[in-house]
Length: 220
Ligand code: AP5
Image (cartoon, rainbow, N blue to C red):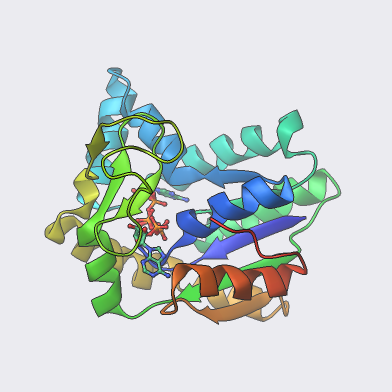
């Protein structure tokens, strides 16, 4: 099963994709995480990628398309994948179709998680992540089970993302409206797009996605 999760910054794509990766055995491919790994290297390319990400702009299509094409060809994607953060532009959506067609594959579901701007700002300003494994939390809505200890890897070190600063968040919203929303008609025209209410609590959103995918809702 190949799935695309769409939604503005902070809508919960990563939170949900991780749950379905564990329960459905399909690979979670988060382009933001892949690019953060590149940005953490001390190379000139890594510095350039970090600069773009921290400002809230998109990295060039050619870079991210090559990265995804290489990734979906790997054996761990054989049983399917859930894309989080890709595609983000119309050329990326077209390139994804081409790369899948070459492998005689297609997209089964495209799910848009809708959340209003006030809630998005609240979520991004309260988000923190594990410095070691990247697991994402929220100061009020999604705290670690044991205070100060990552649920996934047990680390006690947490960080805030540089692009969750208010000025970068404003830029990310603007980029989403201008460059990413135009891909919605692309999937709507092919009757693939389903829209869900992302204002609901995390477990309720999981239940809605599970119903669309036709699987049991995974628990946290
Ligand atoms: P990326 O990392 O993909 O960021 P994003 O799309 O802006 O999305 P986020 O990760 O911020 O949010 P999310 O929707 O995953 O929400 P989350 O689950 O964390 O991209 C970062 C940058 O990389 C881009 O700006 C760009 O520069 C570059 N990039 C990436 N892909 C690219 C591409 N294809 N092309 C070009 N450039 C690219 O949830 C947010 C918070 O809310 C968390 O704290 C969570 O606990 C909480 N939360 C989640 N769901 C709920 C809920 N239902 N109720 C209450 N709280 C909730």
